[in-house]
Amino acid sequence: MISTARRLLAVLLLTASAGTACAAETPATTGTAAKITLRVGDQKAGSQALLKAAGLLEGTDYTITWAQFTSGPPLLEAVNAGAVDVGGVGNTPPVFAAAAGSKIKVVAAYQQNLAGASIVVPGSSAITAPAQLKGKKVAVAKGSSAHYHLLSVLRKEGLTFADIQPQYLQPADALAAFSGGTVDAWAIWDPFTSQVSIQHDARLLVDGNGYVNGLNFQVAAPSAVEGKEAALRDFLTRLAKARAWSVNHKAEWAKVWAQETGLPQEVADAAVDNAVSTPIVIDDAVVTSEQEMADAFSAEGLIPGTLKFADFVDQRFNDVVSAQ
Image 1: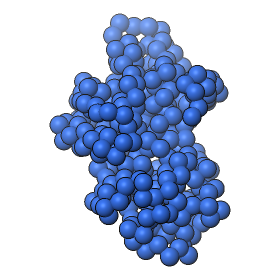
Image 2: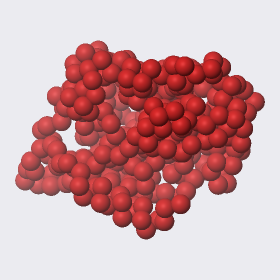
Image 3: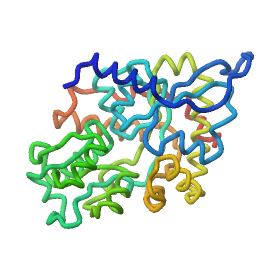
Image 4: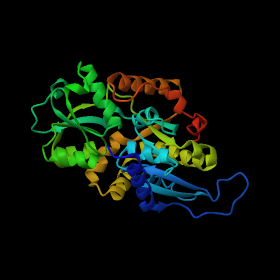
């Protein structure tokens, strides 16, 4: 295990090296978020690329700095460490962060196509059904949305993590392992699903339908919720508008996505179909669904003890959804 100190150092170094984007500061005025810097954690083809594609990246009265992360768990480590104010993650990282006692608040929710989650196998693999994962090496990013997808698939087959050989790898390492033939399957999300399918002849074993809730979140540090509320509200409003825009402008979104990530256009085109998501309010159904996930991880012994997910939710920004 990497020590807490080393993880924190890595987070701070990553943040310090991240690129900066968005508007020049304007003089402070009453009731605005002027002279505020909002530090945003992002992932591949995430919020920054989407806001740029929708034409909503510029014109703020606060500054945005961006830090890129490989997946949700390290992003939320940065939020907890105070290196990032807010960032976008899948449905599982907040559960693991909450279980670890992290200082986080879920402030916005989005509903994604369930086909965006997938477990893939090599095209030549003899594995044709989820039950055949028993005894196999399966790559997955620990604490990511794919982690719960894999758990849910195993549970439906009467299996547990003790019945497989989980290989806890971040996406880049998992891609290398998958393409190199050192793992038998990979639980992942788009754009990696489309990338590995198109470029490495992967075959879909099972997607998220019937297994996952398809939720994504923006998760903030409590200090940012209280101290940068105006800037955070504006950012979430822009993001909600951008997500609504992406549903009806997939071609434009995919073009920017390819440019921003360096992925081939055909990969971006395929990924966008699964990656667009609709803003939704954080209601009781969202909290209950996440609580069920937390209980499942707890029962499996994958997180310590139990937690009350509602304690890590702040619903003050729900009105942002109607503003789209």
